[in-house]
Length: 260
Ligand SMILES: N[C@@H](CCC(=O)N[C@@H](CS)C(=O)NCC(=O)O)C(=O)O
Image 1 (tube, rainbow, N blue to C red):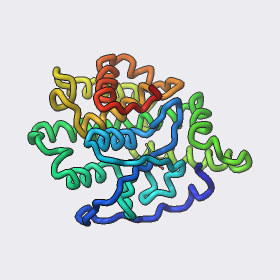
Image 2 (tube, rainbow, N blue to C red; image 1 turned 180 degrees about the vertical axis):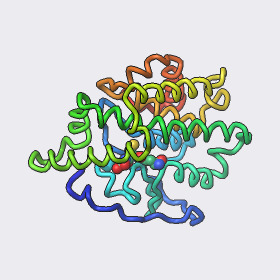
Image 3 (cartoon, helix red, strand yellow; image 1 turned 180 degrees about the horizontal axis):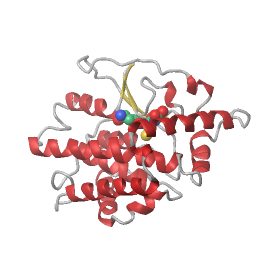
Image 4 (cartoon, rainbow, N blue to C red; image 1 turned 30 degrees about the horizontal axis):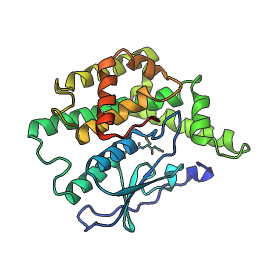
């Protein structure tokens, strides 16, 4: 649950990827919200990746990202250490499994994979955030989903401050400077681009999913499966092939953002 410590800067507990890290794995994610078991695209990506790599891991929840090493989720506990950020976790797992994450991919596949991942995680993702937090009609779902456990007395203040932060961040990112209609255009171009990246064999790089599919499908799950629908859910319905792809990735690994 987010409290007033929302205002406190996160602590830094990062360690070097080069350290020997072979302890037990514990993935920390956001709690369920908006009708989704795993509501965070980045947490879902790592849950899919760990499952695909057939590594033993446990999973836990932290409702207040401010209490995590970098103020965001997911992070991975490795024995007594913590590693924050899904991309760095991917790099770590690549080392731990001796190339199990990116090994075997050509330079072209890796390049296309990162391009799709950056588009999904660093552009489209912000419209997921905006479609939830900045739409006045949808905003009550955010209060309920992310701040539902807060005492009634502080809830209005904390949620107002949190929303103001999102407004500022979205403006700084750049998308927040555009009309909603223009944002729809940006989202459609992102979705069409992703749809164009899927190979006829079914995934980004052929006939089996990999890290990059988990990234893109995690983002798509956060659009297609959050309830009630946001403006982005409605718009994404124009791309049924993309929805089928997101389901194909999740089915392949047997890990779904939604309840199944
Ligand atoms: N680059 C990070 C992004 C993680 C991220 O943005 N997580 C969101 C949840 S989906 C979060 O914790 N947001 C809280 C905040 O920004 O205060 C990663 O790949 O792990």
